[in-house]
Length: 89
Image 1 (cartoon, one colour):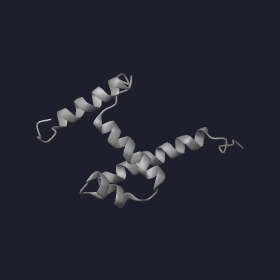
Image 2 (tube, one colour):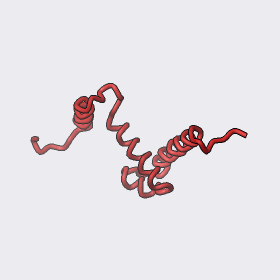
Image 3 (tube, helix red, strand yellow):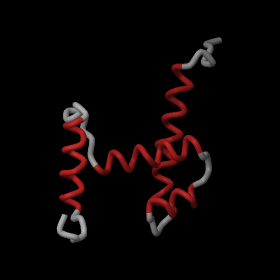
Image 4 (cartoon, one colour):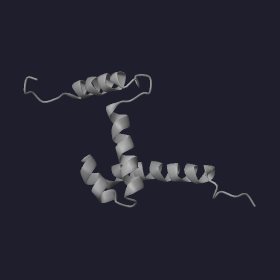
């Protein structure tokens, strides 16, 4: 409103207010959880595109971005375990 930059606290408050308005105040929605969800979804839709994700997230190190790939692979493994393709022999 005043033309100033947003502080990290202001971003937290905006996300909190939006979660409350959506009836999701008890779901633990934070700027970090939104960022993590974006990164995981991006990798699910664009497998192996770590360099692109690195640029989108503004990471200086690819190692930092690779953390999202590791959690994405764990999600895929969990989904496979629950799927009908997982047949015990």
